[in-house]
Image (cartoon, rainbow, N blue to C red; front, side, top):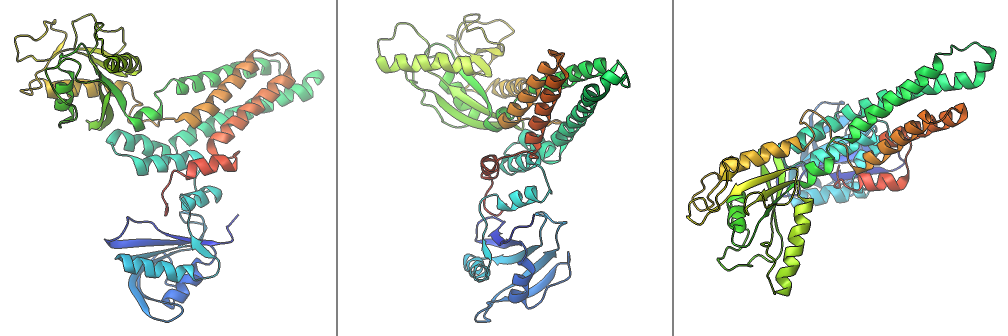
Length: 431
């Protein structure tokens, strides 16, 4: 249902800039343009218009104007774009002029996209994909967000929903007509097998790496005893002096985290306190405890201590640091030999870490599901398991209904205002 008020906001970057794009969306968008420009240009054709104050008729700016009649627009409503000169005073003057119209107000964060959702221009998953696309900083993030925004995940969910509707129809047939002998007995097998097959599809989807790994970066932890070269190697890996380097044992007492992008993948390198058992320093002991916790949470662990003495970890990489010095640890040929001082082996290590990291992320040609989506997928999978465990058609029908509700919550067919506030609150004003 169209909104009663008309919203506006600057949709381009903050001024000053060469161009500032002001968007106006809602039932009065064309009336506002008529009063500002004295005319309403032809739809979807760029036109140069002189914008004037509706009160004083003072010239505000000469702008490029685009008119988009609803519902075939970004928001599903009548939409106007004013391409202004990007000075702060120009933008402020035009904003004040628009705000003077009855029923016009400044848009809230994410309100343009929320109206697109409300008017059926995109579903909730596509809206989240758009938010991820706007926030993407790496190539891997951009690709995954593009898949989600492009509707790949929503298409999969719609296919699941059609399967559930088919299974529900078969179940209702069993409930209504089984006593009359008009329903084939094989429906029983079709429903059981169909529920099991759909449940497996959802389980496989849940087993994929989470979207949060893409956004926050995989945690790469450098660990080992004091003076094993962790801080020096961290600085070499991230290309700057992020950690203090000293020959004094126990210099690093707390974790140092540095986010970087390597080969299009977001990584969070973490330097840790040197591991030893004989420290009497209370602060250093706290740092060592945090080091152990960081190693447990690491996606990839770079071990700079004696070979084979690192913790058991599925993605442990043995590092022979200080390879330019005589006191460097002796390690087998399977280790990565580096010298942070000379730079030898550092590029190779970065490549190996990035390659390993890519195996822990969703493939670049697939979407990545977030925590909200996982909750509803898990609810659907649980209800499908319950279908297979029951022989009561009423219970099976109810569980299939729960599956439909979970899938509808994924796309936004079923939603709460609190949920929408959370999703669209992630957007900036003007989007």
